[in-house]
Image (cartoon, rainbow, N blue to C red; front, side, top):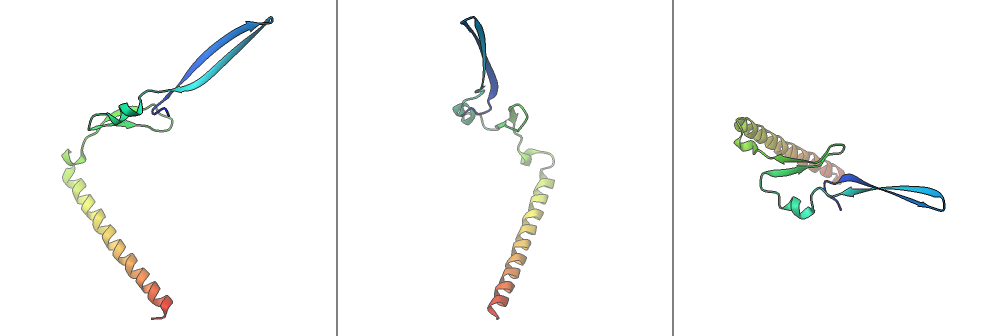
Length: 103
């Protein structure tokens, strides 16, 4: 399968029996082979999005950015919210199970 392919076309014309015939065939042409994609250097990514041309990106680690402390704090808050949500969901499920068992 073509990864990051682009459309390519081929036209041909033939003449015979006093008539002309034209044929156009469309196919995908590889931009990068899968092995080339796997060999991208660390910190590089290939962006494939519907309706857009493929793009090579240079990744920047969030933890090396000026906003790293704010991002870390937001991650800790989100993790704590998930833990609390999981605990309250477990408590709700336990209560529902107790109720269905009549205990």
